[in-house]
Length: 423
Ligand SMILES: O=C(O)CCC(=O)C(=O)O
Ligand SMILES: [Fe+2]
Image 1: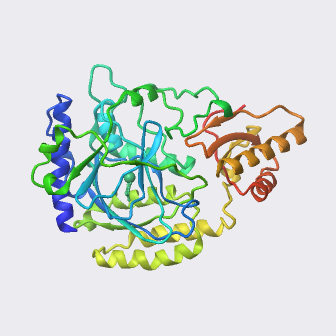
Image 2 (image 1 turned 30 degrees about the vertical axis):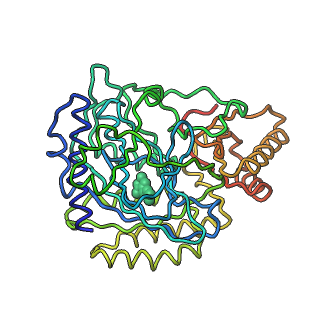
Image 3 (image 1 turned 180 degrees about the vertical axis):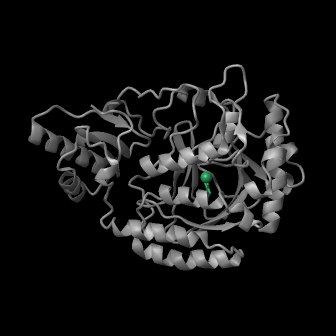
């Protein structure tokens, strides 16, 4: 691990400098701001999951750092969005995967884009991966380059806090602080104009066009070369190593196991790793099945010991998850009324499931609403993948409605707080 950390550190800095140079932005920013105790190594363990089509290894997300250097074992399961499709990143024991994170996207004014990725579970084999995150100090200010910056300047602390708040409140990251102060709601999408397999773009962002124009972001570098000379690969870096198309199944839930390593952990954990883990815990989205959770307890602890982690951060994480799971039997999550906008007559509901179960749930919602009010069809707008839709339902009697819909459709239904004034 020490070796992985130190070699990744050197590689990440070299890559960051080369990428900065390509932007004609010569800078010692990374050397000054991304130092030992602001960067992290995270070890991920994904236990085998008997129902891979129902459980995510890791939820779709972008990394909140500058660069991630990832090493995956031979099991496979990592997928990323390319051309509006999920593609698998084929394991290669001689390859590292380099992922551009949100901070580089902002710093490069969208020239480099942080790509959305996720991990699928495997029914029989456990999977491990190790990731090095190139992060600045919390006080570092990320300044967007160019004459026409799309993002306003922000500190890493500000960004982390924002991400955490968004994940907690909404279940996903809203994204980088745009230069435009007002968030604009996208036009509602009807069922018919939902693409078959759309990019799970963060919703409600005014800079979506820029993202589409940005450069591809996953580089794959062969370890044997990269350790000595990453520059050799930079000439033709933008491509996917043997990526294979996989049609992603739906109705995914989330199983995630994490161990953490940092040689300077006492100092570094003050406001760093704990935050990452908390964010992950929030992103777990509260749907871990209990038998897997129990296996995880042992695995987490042993990973911690193995790595000399003095603070068992993962155990804290686990406690939170256990409490959540208790409230989640039956995989229905209803957020507390306290979090909902009770002044609004409507509350958005997120439905996650396969297309058939979503359609069933959607039909039921419409029926319930039509029955109770004789009102018209509610507005639908898409958040992310086709298996996730947003729909407005009435605030009163919400629990009955959701329970009913869940039992009949088997889709996972989640009530979330309104971001916009839903009238
Ligand atoms: O396990 C993997 O392949 C991906 C891990 C990842 O995306 C992360 O740790 O942020
Ligand atoms: Fe990631």
